[in-house]
Image 1 (cartoon, rainbow, N blue to C red):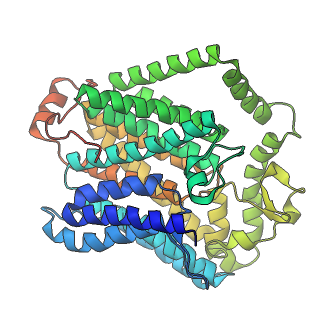
Image 2 (image 1 turned 90 degrees about the horizontal axis):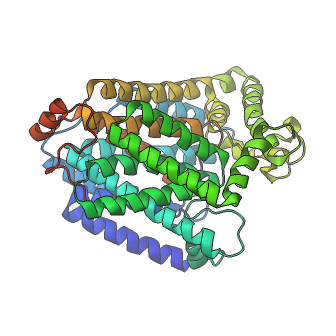
Image 3 (image 1 turned 180 degrees about the vertical axis):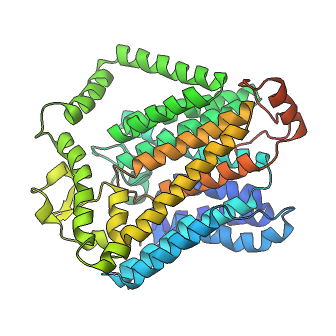
Length: 468
């Protein structure tokens, strides 16, 4: 075990637990901010096949422990959204685990999903009692991801990953910018998801100084998405922008126009940026079929064929797959040319840069279908809440919808092995449902009714969100 990683993990956990004990909501916001920003190589290893205790798992376990005592003091007891679908999906994973080709890997996968995703979702969704709490949580997330973007900025211009250098001594001479995330593409998607969060928080903030701070964080995350140098996150951010332009407020449209103008200025002023963007597009859809990026793009689609070919080998595999994490041990080299796509971890073992296809082979048609239904249910619920909301509330629901679309899109072109990103998504789902279902304050309702298209902030006095 790395002493720096362990000591820092214990310090972070101690800070989070102290706040969870004294003020649970404040502590939970701080904890989530740590979860989405801290590197997962901050961990305690036990050996013998026992799952490692990453900083994310330690923090979630602490949040669950203190939640058991704190929930007795909640003024209202919120129901768990989508509990039927979540239970069905969890049970399908359990069956896949029992039939797993690698039982220990399947047990680990089920444990990670139950703790890092399911329990965190339950804790956040039942803790948030009002919209002020939701905005406070969003502010903490925005601050955490803004910090990650700052690390990416330093890495880009100083050519050192300060996180990797401090913890592992491996932060110099790197090709890809990753900040505190395990891969540049995952960093890019986290930054893309951070943009709508910060835009929504900025609309609700009334203090000019805090608005300026949030604007700086917003611009940092846009830059961080670009520094990730990946077509997927760029495309996701563009899709989110389109959704916000259609569904968001006038103020949010102005913010995106501002970002667009700044982007154009940067492209004109810095030819290298323009060349990077043009190269990324041309190597994907251009005529050069032998380029690494074009092969990488095409092999993501081929993974669907691979997944179906493997699961149809038996009825049991067709229904429930090979078990969680089973793809890590599969030799699929017969389906690809040597090092096809440029993403081969080991000769004969192809990485799964398509999470949905990966889930098909691991959980079969039953598990992957339930998962898709769950995601569709989330998006459908958000659209209904957006339709029934007014003014500034529509703006924040539009931001949640755009974040959900980014995550769904990411599942088609990358393997989501980042605990930060998965935790981020489920926390945001909990926040989105709670924000849409909780009633606004009387003053906020009056403002929405008087100016339904306003981009100004509702719930001004009661819902100011601080940086935890």
